[in-house]
Image (cartoon, rainbow, N blue to C red; front, side, top):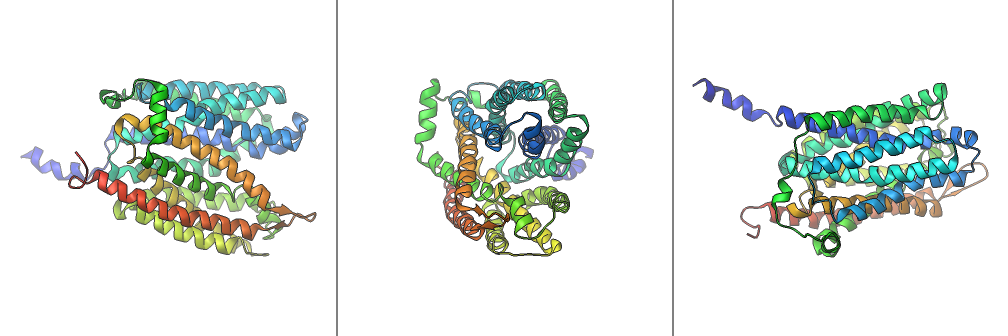
Length: 420
């Protein structure tokens, strides 16, 4: 009788203690990966002087990670489903830590450039492995919540990681943030080694044995290609505004450099709060509905924001918070929806290619944004409104494409409609 009476409270628990541990570790792991990528840009002023390099050389240091990460995802896709995901995660995370350590030890520009390439080759695949693990361990009905917590790593790195990294760089040299990341990553790696259980369920499903054949199958699948195209436009909408966001805020909106940290801090904190809530409600009301709400909010704010002139700080803060909530709603719900697309035997490969597409698309989007926006001698940015319209157009097309993906997932996961 006691057992029966205790069952209802147990059923209300969404995650077991082990599942909660997995979510926490994957979130912290993503935090280290994102922080390693994001901390480099704020260090630009220091690196230009310390290493005596030009702005174009520094640009190569930043982009080297993205392009090597994109190439790594494609190279990994063929054999991503042939190993225990825990072992695969540890292998690439070890390589990431090694690459970050090389960044911490880098004495010259060329050494740092090679170190960023190494870091990207390993770090660029970890996100796709994490998503494959989430797909293996969690039901579709709760993946929105999981993605909400894991994606919160981006906002956390903005609020906590970057300020701490800059503080260390100013007091102990530009190498110190990378040492900090190495130290934190080692703790995460040890926790994975000791407490993570093997993830081998996908190995029980018969799949392609040849890596090239497997990759060819992934990139020729019509449904997968539709998903990759959606990811391309998702990345385009997100990455186009980022490169010139601070410059637009200072020179066009009239925000001072001293006010920028406050703007990013408030936006980051709100994003941290919004991530888990967005994940929860994407499970409750449906992934595509949340994506639709986020897209409409995002398109509205982008159209307003990119046409502003001199604006009070409080208005800019409100618009930034709403914009990031819209972007978070799109990314969390889309990521959760994407996990339902690949077959069990294709999950690792699909996620690897999808991550590569995202990395490369982000790089291309930044280049396109640079071609559209023009900076005058006074610093004011021209054609930022045109850039906003391009982003709105990309969001609108993605809204349609994600609708068809949602319909496919509903058919696939329905016990009545799904093919045997």
